[in-house]
Length: 271
Length: 173
Image (cartoon, rainbow over all chains, first blue to last red; front, side):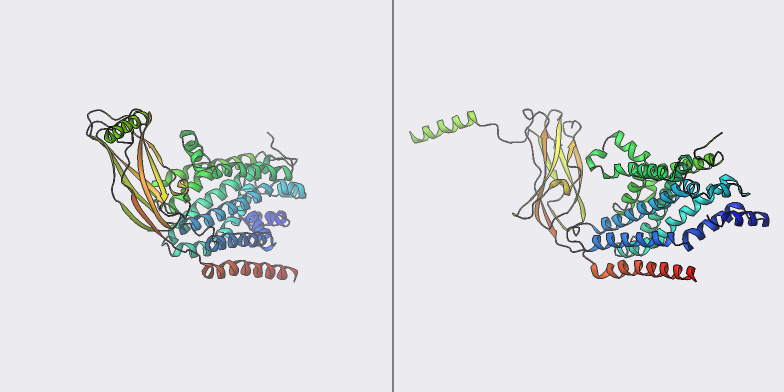
């Protein structure tokens, strides 16, 4: 956010909403500055590797093509959400460590608008990752006749997870005293949320495991996409799995906006 | 004399051998089809029905799905074929029946036998009936598609790499 301060002040005087100006500058820094493109390049190399392995590896050859498609889509969604988490976790604590937060806070843009703009800028990483994912998903889904379903399910769930993790990163970034702490805690939270997806099938049975899968937005989103792509279930049958990603996104976004009003220059929040 | 010896030997054997696996009176198990043909990686299902034709309610029954290769190769790991292979049955009243749906995925090509065994939780009470064996034929199917995915796997990172370089060069100018 190098030029944001002056730009925000100028545009605020000209009548443009402050968050639009901040968002425009954030997007410019992210995409023209090069970091966003580099992240997308790394993302595309990862998805290419996974897609190629799923389509060509002898050991994976027994996979139903739906499972290969599901594997690629799930990796794309999770890594896309990881990108937004990192952007969110760096948003405030990173500005603070780079010494640019002070000048940003004195602009005539409310702190909630600043956080909202940073949340949307982080989400742009997911939208770009999704655009990268589309050709792979289209190729693997076209023979199965599930291109539309796959793209729609991965967009809905991926967007919810990306928004949820971006908001989580922002909350941690608002509370953390250093960028290192913010990134570490955010990554730990992501891994903790994803850990249940690695449990063997038998461990996911029973009311407690079922409740855990429903409450955890990561496992619920993963389960929804599994059911829609692999089991060819209808959306109406599986909509219950989208409740926790939706609620978590709403709660964490609201939490980030609430904490933004109490943001302090030295880290953490105050009254 | 020889017949008498043979009869004595049979009687002695019957005294020491465990009871043979004869189904409990009236309890029977059947399947809705005895042959299935599919392809590697495909999912399929069949139904088995356990019927209680006896005078008493059948309790404590456990249905178990088994799959085995009818050739020496390949090795079969049943867990890969069906995530749920055990069902604890509610009591079945006289004349009643219970139908179970078994969902499976063909993870090996070859010829296999699939059957359902009904066991009692207390094996002394109720010997086990088996369903007839389902003759399962799984045809090989190759899903390798390196020629198809490779252009996309190379083109997308290539385009993004070129875009990244172009943006960086433009910024320098």
